[in-house]
Length: 584
Image 1 (cartoon, rainbow, N blue to C red):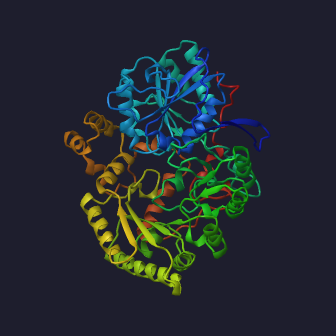
Image 2 (cartoon, rainbow, N blue to C red; image 1 turned 45 degrees about the horizontal axis):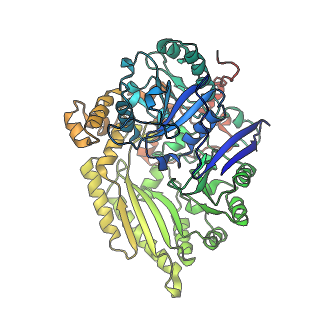
Image 3 (cartoon, rainbow, N blue to C red; image 1 turned 60 degrees about the vertical axis):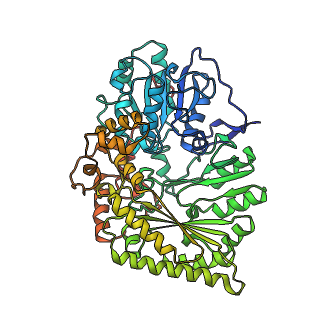
């Protein structure tokens, strides 16, 4: 069934928002007088149905169906198969505006494959006429430059305020028969837009900023994103996903989300409750970076339980867990908990600015075991610069204490956590983090570290280990800090049916130049053409503090405009997003 949601926003404007249930397809209006838009998620459908940013854009466009026809495309077609809308079956090449949602660096090759299969030239410079091919999403304001030669423009930032007026302007120009070149010239200086060779810099768009910084509460509130589609095909089957916070105040030095989503914001309890009451889902999944920091978490979960709605939580912070909360989770059906440890030693955790209290962590493990949760998942990251033998010895002691806390929690009943699942990924230095200057560990080094960690875990009963593939992590690292010269490699990979090793042998570029060296302090990066709010000087200071093992306080709760640390106060002068009535 189709459920029409009506929610009151803080501005007192009433916004109609749609949630489509399983097996229900949206009604697609006729194209006449409207701008047809291909909204492309270049991964499989199940991931699209689990990604809120893509669904936010879909909702924004479909709310304006007097102006637009937004149709959905996914990157799951066979090689050589023309990409077609799952809504109408129309081919991708018919749409005058093609919008790619970039959420992972691995999307780049899928973008090229979809264009190639649709007989659309891969290079923007070879497309003299419409369609306009653009990209948005997290990668578009992190580092979209490896895919830039295939794009006519990209949109940097959150879509809630500036994106629809941009597309309204494109609609007007397309219906008027303006050329592609003239149209790109007219949008080159609009908020959030970067057109190659026409835009000098682009400032990330932030929903509600700077007004959200004003007031006694400082940061917030966030108007939460939530699922457009509640579907059996989603990775989170039949689950309504709700965003309860955006960004993170802790500033872990490896984590892009902690920097590119500043200022950190939280949703209001009443707002998320209203969404649930309107949708009436069977299950709710909470999306956010630091769930236990949200003051409304426990009251909201009690509210869901009272409504007899199941819920799912992502990673939690150990210092936010207490007996009352854990007992509630166990009583209401939670069987698995996830805690992120990240660094393998206390020294590294301090260096990466991970606020991690060892004592509180082991107390939490003991309590989790005592309450007989079935599984405890722990996440680590390997390959931080300067990782040494002393760190590995610290890890050995950590694993011993972990097992002791687990056994102590079991008590005389000998029943506790049945399985500890340890997962280790490889550090991928990202743009717009302090690690953008860091060298990445070699494939051999990473494989050696993964093998060593696995061997250490094998000595403990009930502990399993899984690790990321080092080669794939290195590829991600290349794309994460690459520039437009990497585009030729992407083209080779697309030609070689995704065979990265073969493509790398054919590519004249130097992978080690991008990955294996520490960047100079004054090096100019491709992504310097972006302004995300956090200053490059601040990130450099954070990199230097990492090397010295010094921590930095988390974001001030008084708001960015009262904080002088990271540069976000400069965004007070950010141009106000243009209104729908002023797009000529």
